[in-house]
Image 1 (cartoon, each protein chain N blue to C red):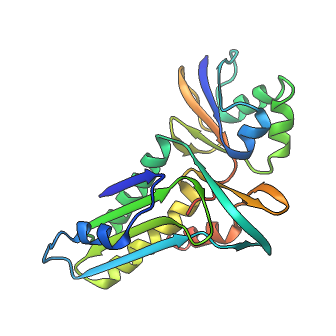
Image 2: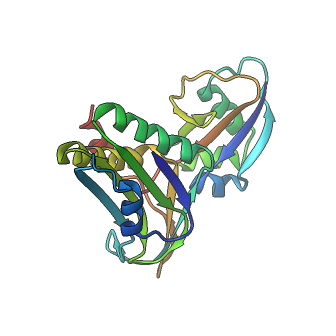
Length: 149
Length: 85
């Protein structure tokens, strides 16, 4: 299991190859990449800045990944989340799960993202033509997490 | 009780600092009580907590409910609901 919080971009292909490590037990890889959009709630977004809580961020991501490992049969999990200032089309987050079968890989990947959205201490601030604003948490994110209970 | 208090995101900006060391008086035993005591010291804390619609709390880097207890040298963080991913 690997958790990284970094300013630098990531290459999903390289990360997936590293996670698989030619392990013949890996029959399925599921991945999710989150990307900065150019519009939020109807307003054009020039850039976003991600703040986080160093220390707690890594702990919470590791705890989420551990929960996924308990719930599904996984071979490995990778979570990379970027911080700092990002522009539309930039990658923000990568989650990769490997398993012998697709069901476990798919479900665990979605579970990690749903929990990350509500539990990992990151905050987005958007820069728009109208000025800067903190992004509000969405009720739909809390609902997405609830369905795993 | 000596505590390290941290603020993040919109709450950090409203309070005007990212952290402070406080010595909470006897009787402050929970996160909710601490928050009330911090705010009653006046602005910027009073206004910052009043303006932040929802405030989440972590004690020693784990998310907790407001009824959670405190201990000497605890790290208590206040912040708005998270918006990563």
